[in-house]
Image (tube, rainbow, N blue to C red; front, side):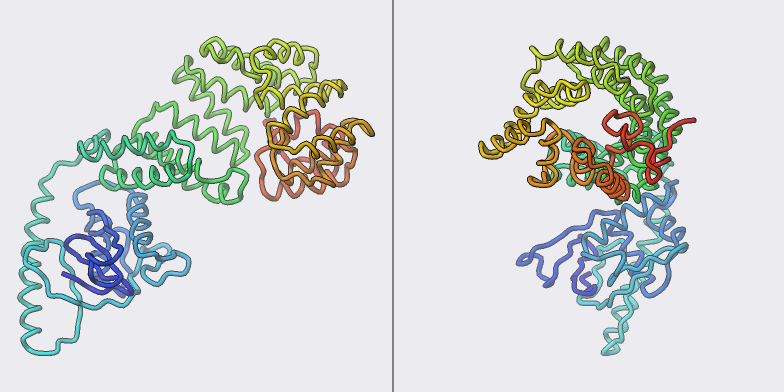
Length: 479
């Protein structure tokens, strides 16, 4: 059957959507089976509020599924229809109830007897012949629907760890591959694949954790949108744990959400500890835990876990993390010794240069720090004139002059080792001795919940402004 739904023509048999009704000559979209059945359910009750219970029982009969599956399918329908949940023209969310189809609906072609998932499309008949055709069609469709319903009632409830079909598994594995790529287009495609997998296999535990992971990749953690997504991310991860209770990666992701987005240090430490308990030989888990512990000011524990990471991962020998912990502890000689150990191995590595420049600056070794900074500028594409200007600023007023130039003249937007504005501006201002200006930029960064602020209480750069009344209690650590 072909119906006109708002601006779209929908083939209710194939799920094809087209804006001119001719799928051969138009750019088309196709709804997968479950979103199509859900849309047909809404069409059946169009103009009425359809509860979530009704949709779950009609679209997923004899299956125990949660409302997140419904939400995922609904988002796919809205995406296909180009509908906006905040300003809907097709499907309106009824808070606390469910959804309502609000678009105009018009029948274009009669029902075909081969259709299983039919709907009641009301239309004012133009002749008695049309009335009879509709009645016969509805009766036939109803009998087929009842037969289908009785059949699916006999299907056993799937196990918690049920795998998708072979074709769905291949689709899912493609999503896992795309998740490892570096570009947002791949992540967007992976997100769609994982949502498809949840719809077809709602009890498949790993996909919930991977959907949360790709959503984390797609949001900027220095963006308030990340904070607004916390409940959704936690729901997905807790669903994964419910289906697979000892998944270390899920605990690490929950720790990341608690630490980097919620700024909840107590909860983050609990999740990190759970992850380490599950597998004490996972190098990545120890590295992430050490980063958190450093931000929390638990330096001895941070050193313990970074050493465990180095023991487990041979590449850990070249990590700058040990030097950073010593730097935060203000054990500068130990930090410099670590950087000297790495210099021959990573002399032109950007992370090494940033670390070395910062540590040398904190120890008052300005000339050596500036040499590393010049190399950072070169790697970041500074012109010869810009580098010459930086050298002049250094000759006139040391690193203080260079930071003032970066802040007030160059107004550097790039990350040259100090993050991005407004936090980088705060760091330049502190180093240039402009404390009031630094506090102003810190407050701007706080309003954006910039990730770098999590180190405010331990980074020596902020010592001169850390106890300013405006910034008191800004980051609350464990008691």
